[in-house]
Length: 305
Image (tube, rainbow, N blue to C red; front, side):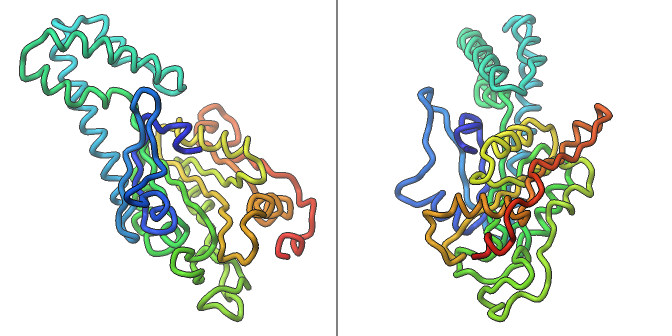
């Protein structure tokens, strides 16, 4: 879903873990390009510093955008003031906005072909940054809740336009299903064979407490429409966003062909409430907190079985 929605302008910082194994399975890769040859830029960082790594991607893209904007204004008399203004003032929220901006960049590159100067050559190298970049920090709960949490919290607090996707399996999955801070009370896992004594860290509420962070809890198997809506809202939000995606895992002990139905049970039992917290609604005098799931309709034990 992430690559299909934003893949043509996607920058991914992937924490080490299951997602980095299937995300960078050399010599093959699951990532691809569209018909125009545009696709995600993917890189894997260490388990403990992926958030800082992804934040660096955002800062770099922002700096290159400043360079491109400065050069574009400098060359406006040669390029054409009307084209320059249309590029700099173009809205880039909807996918149709992005497509329109790409057409303007094609016109810009045609203009630059007829300009022989260092500034024009420099602008050619950074012109793609005039299309809004979608930066995503991707990893599991062991990274986000636990080992990499300090960096993740720093990235959220930065206020930068970053998006964080946490694939929450509630255990350290890639290393065999050990207990993590995302593991719920009484759950049996490695290093918690008698059941975990402490509670699960509420990462959603911690992020909501900042007030300026978009937060979504999703479960694709329970409500794919809500998952799609949260992903699109998070990406369009001009600020930090956090998506917590309930993810089934072989360490959970059931046949993974039933994974999506297990996600549905997690929501139906009230174990994994679906929610969205959108700070934009506060500016419209509306409640930013939206609970997308209903009251529990099945007993919790039906989900656990």
